[in-house]
Each structure stands twice: as C-alpha cells, then as structure tokens.
Length: 221
Image 1 (cartoon, rainbow, N blue to C red):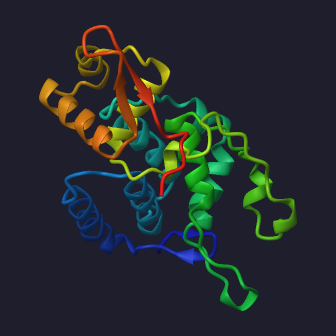
Image 2 (cartoon, one colour):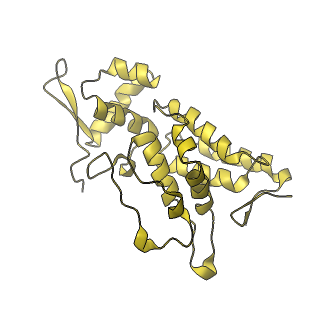
C-alpha cells in the first residue's frame, strides 16, 4: 500500500529504492547546489515517501546535517517550533486541486528555509498553509536583511553561507572562514572571488587592515 500525503499518492513500496536512487543521482550530479535545489530535493523526497512514517523528521535530520557541511549554523529548533508548518509546507509543495483552483506551491517551504539558514524573519503560521486561508490575509514579512534578501540572490549554497558570515562579521579573515565552513583555503578564495565578481561584496580600506562590505542592499539591475 502506498502512503498518502494531502490526498496525493506517493511511491509504491517496490518503487521506493529506484526512485530514491534517481533522486539522489540527479541531485549529486549538480556540482554547485543552490537554494532552489534544496527546495526541489525536499519536494521530490516528499513525493516518494520512502518510510511508512517519520518522513518529515527524516527530511529535517537530512537538512540539518547537510546544511552544516556548507557552514550554516542550524539545529532542530526551527523544525521543532514549526513542525506542523514544515509538514504542511511539504504537502502544499505537492498538492494540486485544479477544479478548485489550488496549485502546488513552494512559497511556504521557501520562507521556512530562508528563516532556517539565512536568518530572515518570515511569520511561519500554520494557518497560512491552509487551503481556505484567504490571500487577503497574506502575512507580513520582516526580514533582517534589507532590500535584496539573501534568498533572492544568484548564489550557490556555499556562497550563501560565506555571504552570511561576512554580513555578520565584515572583518572576518579567510582562514576564519576555512575554520567555520570546513572548506579548503582554495575553495574559500574561489567563493570570495565569485562573490566579488557578482558584486555582492567588496574589500574596503586595503587587504591587510581592511574589511568586507556587503553590497546586497543596493538595487541590482
């Protein structure tokens, strides 16, 4: 018997192994992972439902461990506090009811993950995910980051992690970034060069005694 999530049938037990292999192969083939890739992985994972129960918890554990490999400081607090929201966000990312004008959307997952790894402050109210919640009651958003939020930038997850650390500590050194992220010095240098080329950061007051300036609060064309 297949699992069912929000009225959507998931993979049959005999299909799970092959579908998970395809999902992981597809994901691992991408050399540079983005914020959107994480969303896509979780949506497809939910469609498969590899376990009889505990799939949402499994997704949370994966996310915590995986984000730490990029240097993000995440733990289970957000998942515990917003467990129902997270579960319903996964359902809404897969649920369609075309006759009633309801379409699958990842917007709820986007807000959850943005809060989790980027420190934005979207309101994660469970009622916002309900089908009958009117658009007129759309939530207010109070992000910590000005104008161009980090979750809207064209960055890999590695770049986002480093960008967040620079935002919090403009004087951070490359060797400190190596320690914080677990990446090699050559990788950190490559990330920094990429962020500068994209005009998301710049060095001010010289290499030795200067600091980094984050430019994402400026309008980009």
